[in-house]
Image 1 (cartoon, rainbow, N blue to C red):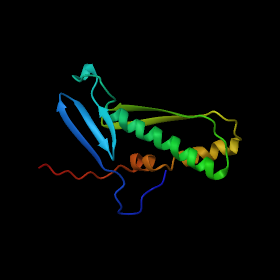
Image 2 (cartoon, one colour):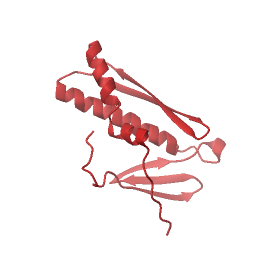
Image 3 (cartoon, helix red, strand yellow):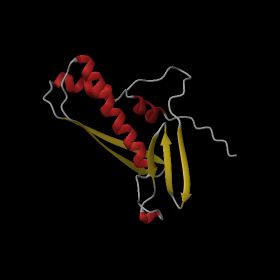
Length: 136
């Protein structure tokens, strides 16, 4: 995954919530939905916002590793990223497991582990992002 230039718009997502907790999201021309589980009063029709964040982390990891491997001429086979989020009080923690379908050397796997720690979404999650809110 490429990182936009400093100061450049990196993403623009629009959310619309008209029914209970079900949210319609659009990024460019791609629709996605979010909702809360039944136990939280939602309709359980889509991923929760935290699951979407985990999905972003997993997707960014898979894409970045694939891009890196292509540049190196490495065959990865299937790239699977399992991502779990944990909450403890006010703290959040993600655990990510990358499973590669092709045989690689110990050195290649170690390098891909280093690259996974540098993906754009990983950097945002680890650094924390400033959020400015305006209510109109």
